[in-house]
Image (cartoon, rainbow, N blue to C red):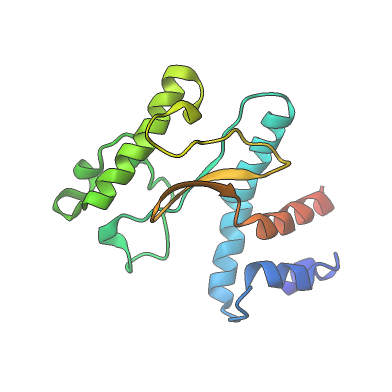
Length: 170
């Protein structure tokens, strides 16, 4: 990580963003960096471009891990939101499904249904308001272990490092 940003003078900033606890765990740092470079920052870039063009845009991160998988996986896996969005959690997790999983399925599904009906997931009833995305506030809907929360992107410092690298290379 340090070598990649050394020529940009970004080493300290990158290390602070990707290893804030100072663990030195190169595997964890590398996993965060690769995930951000391949998926997370490109999603933010698309949200920024669309919202800057005046297109209504909403961004989310699905951080929820099914109850039966907690402690077995490091975090939410790619496409893990699908059974929650489609409210088919019981079909996916069977007897391991908990009331918490069902509640997340209902919440996620409410947003997607509202989006399909109105073009705005923020119109969903009985769930926290999902605001439109803008680069100025960088607010995402984070589907967390405690439920959906609209908040500034907690990965902002990391994503800014990736964005700076991409801008430097471009």
